Image (cartoon, rainbow, N blue to C red):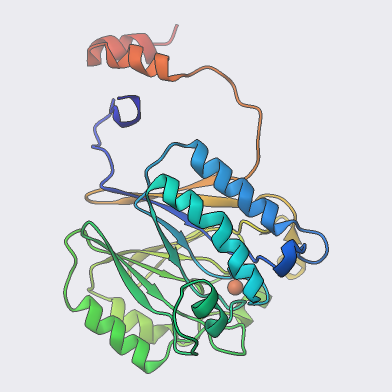
Length: 300
Ligand SMILES: [Fe+2]
Ligand SMILES: [Fe+2]
């Protein structure tokens, strides 16, 4: 009862998505830059997700799954994420990032035949459509979309989905305050904008930047999830921004009838206060709205 109790004016969300990005796993459990235990950081994120006792409709990973596109890195990713998804009864949406290798990801992660075609796909979560767009360019780190991909996207969007669409892609169509990221941006974004304008896309999920940021594109809210591996130290001058071994996070995406919220969850086990509990919520639930206001809102 406690988990779906509502005390405010909004109904429960229609759908919930966990949005993770950029795990950058390496073969043999190696550390990234000989420093970052990327596998432990992913495991930390998964532990926290399980602890929430959510039943998310999807876990969306917006790319850079394997830092060097190694087969063993994808196997390690599966070994860790798939059992969690199974226990949560959720679907994993794997997307390509510039660090991934299409053919290896196809065979090792997706059980598809080898090949270099873009990994675009559509999922349906009870009327909420998630469209995964592969923004990567083989052999390069910047992003681009082929004409055929934009034509495909246009054909998908020609039929609106009952709960609308969420577009997920690695390279987010937003400006960055960090000069070097502009070199690795999604190029020719006006072409994507032309396809998205007037469509039923309600949110765009991205990764790649390794820091949380939000913006709009073609009038659509864009949310970038930071990385699970390492984040960017934005407290430095923009020309000196580098990876920092802290501040990693993932996002919770709550999809309501008429809006979507994105909430950032920091990785780490922190000391928390013990003010609230399920018993406290049950006590509040037993009160009338007026009694609840009196009990919890009135200043003492
Ligand atoms: Fe990345
Ligand atoms: Fe990236």
